[in-house]
Amino acid sequence: MAGALVSTFAPSERAKAAGASVEVDIAGLVPGEMKTVEWRGKPVWILKRSPEMMASLKDKKTDAELADPHSERNKDDLTPEYARNEYRSIKPDILVAVGICSHLGCSPGTKFKPGPQASLPDDWQGGFLCPCHGSTFDLAGRVYKNKPAPDNLQVPRHMFLGDGKIVIGKDEKGEA
Image 1 (cartoon, rainbow, N blue to C red):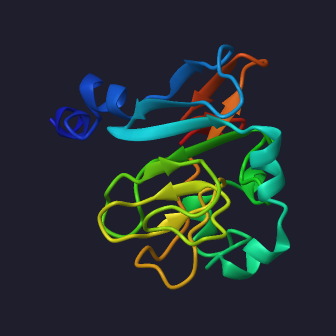
Image 2: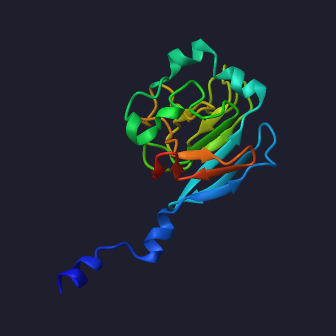
């Protein structure tokens, strides 16, 4: 009797599938291109950054404008240890981030083109803009200061399977 009761607490096959890791082919991504996949019902962005995009992340002037440039806030929930760097990634040219704003859950849009644009500062380096309340994020998913979003975009646990495949929701430590 107790065994039957305990087995009802085990996750269903549907629940397991909802949290399962996702394998993604990224071999065809070109610099400046982003692919969106679904993991746990959330959009996950995989951005292949161009050399210019990567250079913008090394701009120390931008660091001063970011709320959490070193991904220290809520780090265990938002940024795996291997992504706690200026690129917030394992490989500098590949960003993997959950595309949900940390303010109220809207999905930011891409604003990769640098320079002055509507709703963005004149010295915009490229990144993401949340259409709901105007939070802005750089090309590493780090939120700018004085915006409604309290935290950087989440970097899910992930790992590379060679150069052309990535697994989201799993890393060397196991499933997320």
